[in-house]
Length: 118
Image 1: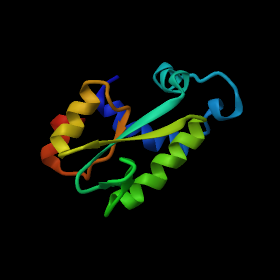
Image 2 (image 1 turned 30 degrees about the vertical axis):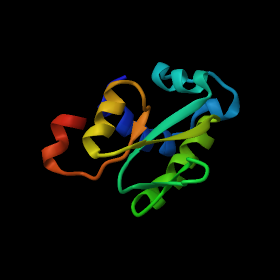
Image 3 (image 1 turned 90 degrees about the horizontal axis):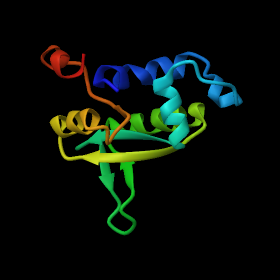
Image 4 (image 1 turned 135 degrees about the vertical axis):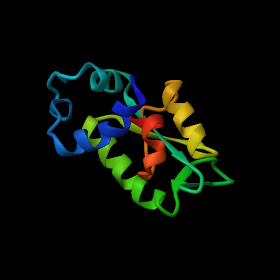
């Protein structure tokens, strides 16, 4: 799955009704792959998240406080569980996406990043 697709996937999935949420067949095979695995792995980078020292769970922080509910809505819409994946930096998030360790990632728009994300 291309990085640019993963980043755009969030908007497409949240804005378009997904048949998967209603038990119907998903038309896009890339979305079907996520549904088939039963989880969507959403990558976040510092400082978008904090890690609970007791449980190790990742929670949104700063801009991530907005990202986490969007990610939860995406997972709900797809009918899968949400797995937040922490990355130490924006470049590490891109590697997470390119290496298929994340399905979706959030980064602010900057013209210099267009070649990284598409």
